[in-house]
Length: 117
Image (cartoon, rainbow, N blue to C red; front, top):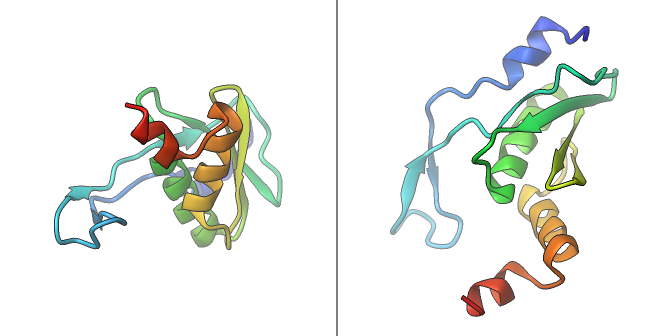
């Protein structure tokens, strides 16, 4: 794999506090974690960076990390999540990408899935 050094560095996550999208910081706040790593088995191109989710990744966190990488690089980030390809571009809404993945995988919205628990 011939991934450029600067592309590999995009995957590194500096400690940064993120705010819960639902409560906007009035409740849950946590440290952002690294959800993706470079996929060294695939050849990245001038338009696409290939990634692999870490074992404990959650689709919403993975798409947010991919979105951060895509915005900083100006490239699309692609990864496989539970045998489905996920593509996140520099202008993509990471939560909508994750929601679409969820509906495709489970046949219902995340809210419907939560209500069934």
